[in-house]
Length: 250
Image 1: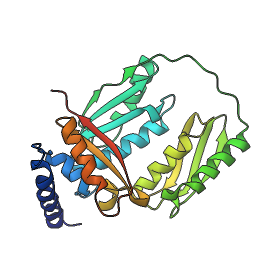
Image 2: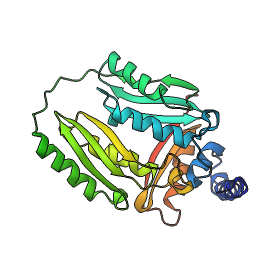
Image 3: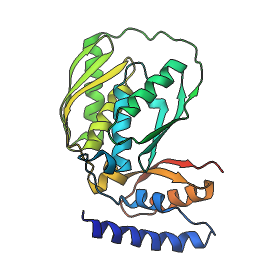
């Protein structure tokens, strides 16, 4: 999508939002508007110009593939190349590992680590045979509608470490495959040899497969967050909304 079209889409969205928001006496920040309409373009060729959505996606992937990081409990927010990690981890060491993984992503200018250390009772997961684990991951990958246009399989499974291989149609599909595999009980870490584009298409920035909209960014208060969620839910084609908006501390 060209830069001109990007501006036009943003302007349309701002106008539509202003009509909604003014009735509530709240103004939605431009960053959230752009996150909703999916405005922007993606190119990893220049770290200085890496879009926030691309950085967030790559940071999530790095966390999912990091050793001894419970990535499913770590959330990522990026604004102007400044990454914020928030959520919970089980130890100070895990918090540091998560930070190192996120910092390794190209385009990260600054990183704020707001992860909270919450000690959890140590539970030894039951050992799962490699072939059974591989079969379960394959089953979950095949069942996920977001991956129907991709060809991703388990290349190997060894003591809880699963290696994925194949071709993902989009960078978002690559991320989704990592998320699906990591969520399978018994999987301790995910590695990837998946081939995928290294850029985000315009529709990927704001919408997942099957009409699932994912909102990211920072808003000034809870009313703005609710307004953004409401607008997303009433957009044609959106069936459900994943709200990852961060409310800025006053």
